[in-house]
Length: 396
Image 1 (tube, rainbow, N blue to C red):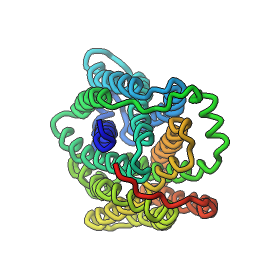
Image 2 (image 1 turned 90 degrees about the vertical axis):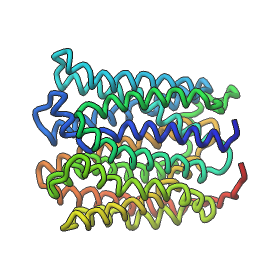
Image 3 (image 1 turned 45 degrees about the horizontal axis):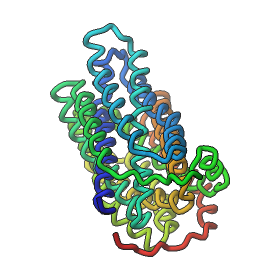
């Protein structure tokens, strides 16, 4: 299989994993009620947090193990199959047992621990490909964006049929991921040097990786914020249905998806610094602007703006990980990026949900946008010190 085709298949895997994940977001309050919860905001917060806590714990494990054995595909296939089983179990078990909501959260965490193998390692396999780091990470970014852009409105429509239907479809989608992943050539380095200790040492000896990790944390914090607080805010402030809420989320994810690839190629030409600096300077302000919007139309326009700025930053940030990581440590490096991103998503859920519950939705928007600006200011000076060459545009 050619590099171009492998890139497309791996991007399809990333797309499918994100599609399955985001199907649940537009009506998450409806879902947790169907699974036995007695509250909306708190139960939704813990349901989303359980998955991302597992992402944080297991992303590094899967990355280090795949680097150690020199294989990625078996872990992607296995993670997808097990994740599919747990998605189905979440929907089915409450109908035949008296499982508590706490038990549901345990299943959700197990599903997350399996699913992150498919997501993180498929992105690592894109890093293993030739053809330009910006191009490969742009493909990953557009897959992430399209998966979320499609999942949000589709999930909203599915909730109109049944509150557990998104879980069943997510299970089917992950089974398709396992089939797709099995078609790809495993290009993980396997020269005998690729051991866990060597990969961890490589990560420790490259402190500059902390820069894209910090930006990954920031970006995903706002994504987690919109997944929970944004969803419930749109439903309450503008009295939107799950289907309409899915469309609002898609207003962010669609431009985020469509612009990822061209912005990724742009970062190969102009370097990583300009897109990251330009994006981080505006992103937090745009998030606060959504919370200030007095009408649903203006809020939707704000979501589009957030999506465009996010698309400018995301592929350059992921490509920076590849620029800084050694070949044998790519799995661990990308796992670290995903772990920081998952911590950010988790923080967006927990901090956003807590602030919204205590002080209201607007305060939560200010905290999310302000955190973006503050962390960007802290990390930007170090980013500007990096001497990164502009990558030549290779052909496939």
